[in-house]
Image 1 (tube, rainbow, N blue to C red):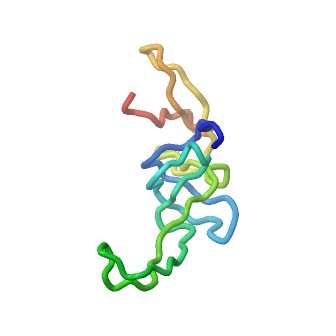
Image 2 (cartoon, rainbow, N blue to C red):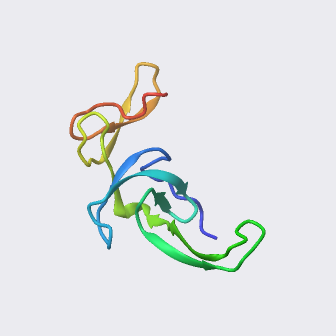
Length: 112
C-alpha cells in the first residue's frame, strides 16, 4: 500500500465538490482516508449496496451510503467568508503554523 499523503482538509471541515456527478454540492467531511488520498463527504457520492441478511441487518436489502471521493476533487469552504478557498500556512503568535484562508486571511484552525 502507498504511503499516507497529507490532506488539505480534515474531518469536520465544510467542503464543496469541484467535479463529478455531485459538482457544486456542499457537505461536511465525515471521514478522512489519508492512505487512499480520499475523503467521505456527507450527502455526496451516494452508492447503493446490496446486502445479504446478517446479524447486523436482519432484513438485508439495499443500503444507500456515501462512498469516498478523491481529496483533490473537494475544496475547503472558509467558515469566516463562506467562500471556497485554497489554504495557506500562517504562523501563530505561539510559533505554530495553522491553516488560513487565502481569500480573507482568517485562521481556520482555531483549536491550535
